[in-house]
Image (cartoon, rainbow, N blue to C red; front, side, top):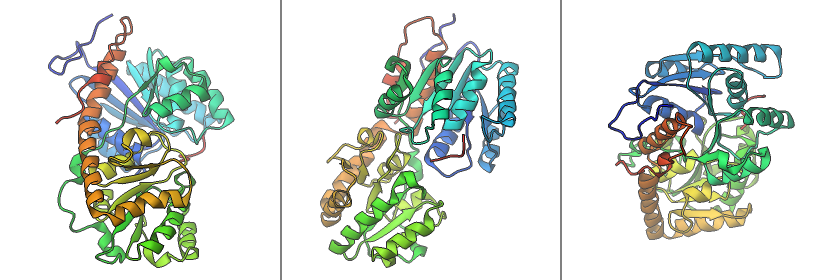
Length: 406
């Protein structure tokens, strides 16, 4: 079998035909943004990139210029005849395009794309795990275990996700690899003036404690608001900003009013860009029940913010506790409020942790280096006849919720 080169200055004998299977690119959420960055940045001299989504979106059409092909195979449910027909169409596409590697990135895509690849002539199937399995159902687990027997490698975005997936799905740990996400730091450069938060009515001099998370149960925004009530009592000038959108918006507004902090809580209502809102924040928070390797945390770090997050998924892998932020080990509002108050009350500490946060992000999680690691991973995968070199894992890093019913 041909050994593909691992250095950046050599080209493979031919382009590797790569098919990325994704639920959707239509949402403004972490995995969708990361997938879009990967699609744009993959080296087109080495990779012929095909993208198939289970739902159409304007972003998918925008990314067509970066792909050999983009297709939509609308799989509403893999248990229905219409869903099985679409899976069959994906399988035929894989065979017709002579795809070398199928890589699935999201829950439904892993089942639909995994089944299609398993029944195709493609010899390399990589399925991703990017959360702690909050979307698992008994039926989904049965299908995943079937797909896993036909999967070449499983790619997790955090060590903790790897451990969880190995235990839940019965996958040998040695079959699971870990590559962390990356973030485009250039999106967060520039002055901290002209924030998108200016139009929300936040007092000009108020320190802002913020959270970037869509309004879904898995994000546990109720914990954020209950901690905000405690912070508000000791920091009377603080304001609290929730950047996102989702079905719990009205419920969260009512909770803020019940807690007596309604006038100090502000919602982005799904408008404005995340980098612009981060300009106005003093502290970035995350209190999810379940996470993978949180893109929100990486964005806080890229914006030079200290981070306070619950110990969910890979949060403790991104945050150096006490150095770039704080990892809260218990799901208790008082425990979550304490490090926020510490940061609000000590401007020097807040600035120092924010500076270290940005430095760590630059060194470890820059998107260009993350994509290069992924490219090396694919190149390594093309030669299964030799021991895995793992150069993709050791490459330099400084370049410088419920999606829908399965």
